[in-house]
Every structure is written in C-alpha cells, then in structure tokens.
Length: 229
Image 1 (cartoon, rainbow, N blue to C red):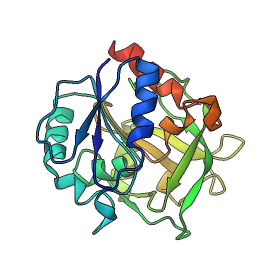
Image 2: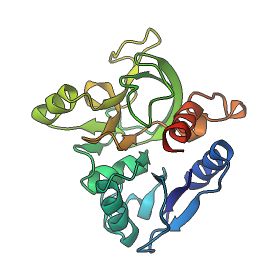
Image 3: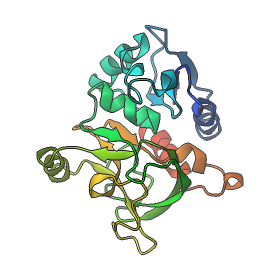
C-alpha cells in the first residue's frame, strides 16, 4: 500500500503519521510539500495534525487553498481514500470535502489527553479493523475540535450513517461528561457520502505503539492495509 502525507508549514504530526504508516504498511509514505501541485499516484492520502499556516484566519482555512490541496480534493472526489487528522479534519471541512465546521473548544482551553471513543460504523476502509459499538482509547490534542453543523445537516449525517466515531464516557455512553470539546452529538469522526474520506480530531497515529500508551489506533492502519492491498 502506497501512501502520501501532506506537509504544511506548521504541521507537527506529519512525522508521527509517517512513522505509523511506514511501520504498519512496510512502505515509507511520500512526504508531499504544500506547494507541490502534483504528487505520485497513491492508495491513501493523509492530512496530518498541527497548525497549518499558523492557524491564521481559521484552522485549516489557508491550507485549504494551497496548491497541493486542490489536487487532494480532486483525488478525493475521484475516490482516493483520504484521512484528515485533527488539523487535517479542519482542512477537509474548509475545502468542502466534509460538512460542518470545527470551532473553539466549548471550555476555551486546549485539550490534550486520552479519550474514549465509540466506533459507530465498521463498514468502511477506515474502520474495518474495529467492531461496531467497540470502545477504543485514542489521544486528542486540540484547541478547536468543537464540531458544529446546522440541525438539518446533523440529521442528514445521522440518517446516512456517516458518524464514524463518538466521544463517550467510561461506560461507552455519549454523554456530556465524555465530550472533551463540546462537539455536537459527541461527533469525533465523520465520513463523506461514499465513506472514502474520514475526518477525525483524535490521533490514531499516536496510539499505534505500546510505548506511546496504547495501540487502538494501530487497528485503523492495519484495516487500511487489508482493505487497500
């Protein structure tokens, strides 16, 4: 499986994604600079976390108009699997690949901790390594992870089964106590209509090695290898 990690000025999780992908797929990903209008054909595109362009204007707003994202959008619309993690989720919403926006955390503080997630759908290339309803632990590190969309959009997303992950408490329930940032309906990860694009605020690449505190994120990459190889 060949992959590409898009690198922006201010990315700080690009190497984490690179390491996880190389260890799990056995192939080093292409590290693609934001100013490149083209890059090699790949099976998976990853938009990593960080602070692209310093998060000026809005998180991901400038990155969404960079030369490389124009190509990412074109390939994603053509069906190339695309994963946006944290700031990468911002880029996916800002570029129109996913609905809604991500606002400041409801408590107005940066959140950096491990959280519980519930897998809402296991019938996608991104979640096939999990069971539906499974509770997993993955870290977050963001100040703008509060997912918002209007009521009609939220109802459509729910009806189409496009919520990939929800924040939950230790009992696996999507409660206010289990929500670290105020996201509507505890949404932590979201698919596009064809489930070939996934945006999520938690960092699976930081939960892919026992030395980092957990391996629940590793199953996502292992599932991708199985689905795309």
